[in-house]
Image (cartoon, rainbow, N blue to C red; front, side, top):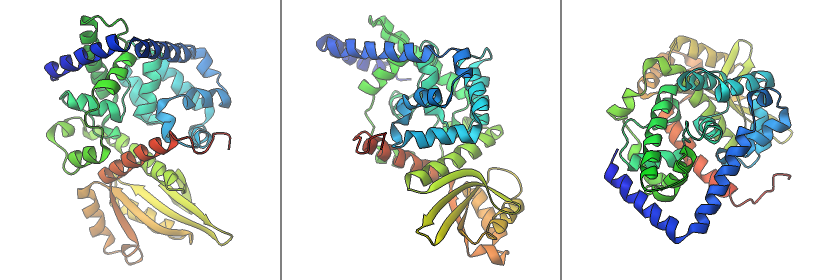
Length: 364
């Protein structure tokens, strides 16, 4: 970390604090209220939440600002995971006794539809002295401070990496403490990151800078055993992109006999019927099985497009296999999973800006 750069911005932050004390008093009060709210959900209370409780709990998250229809998104989380299963894993994540690395990885593996931004925000607002809030702004801020081994994409953020980020954030809190800040929780550090370290928050510049080949530091935090994280993360991002584009999007759907696919986008065209686009994410396993599954999905006449999703090397292998399959080769499209992450990030940013305008009330 560039400590000189950090100290400069802490001093700038301190001057703002002295010049505009009311803003900092208001921010401090806001943080206290957020922490009080999320800490009020004990393990027992989480285990007994009904759908309305879950909606209130999740909809208050800043990470939900990207969604216009919060009910739709939260209902999907409940329906895809089951309310009992969701409550159990949420309680274990927030109040479990195992190390955070293990709790994080289990939750991300078992619960669909919630990414690192939502998960870390819940943890940070419940245990603000221990856990940090991770999102695009945190990446921008820590990257500006030259912190090593930052996860560029969500699938890279394993429990081990999250623990590392929490430790980094605690070191920033310690620097704030040295100059006399009273509130040095990791939620307070998040406010500091937003106020002082957003020197590269132009999304297009950020995406361009980090597009293309991964650097060596990124490779270090993507071990082979994390392939399931990559698969599930990309699967869920494809669903999000479809929802933002106006499709009815779902994961792990049966589209024909013997064919259950990772993600579908579906649209109804008047009274004429429906159109379905099928996505299969390949991170490991048999390419022949992927091709067979996509072929079976084409037995459904509503399926108008099939897309294989993987990394560049795997996509070339899939193309070679598909070249010999007459019924598939001219219909199959290919999508690099890193490009999906960049598209998701761009649409997420656009949606958060538009939804902040509150053009459509929640009760509509």
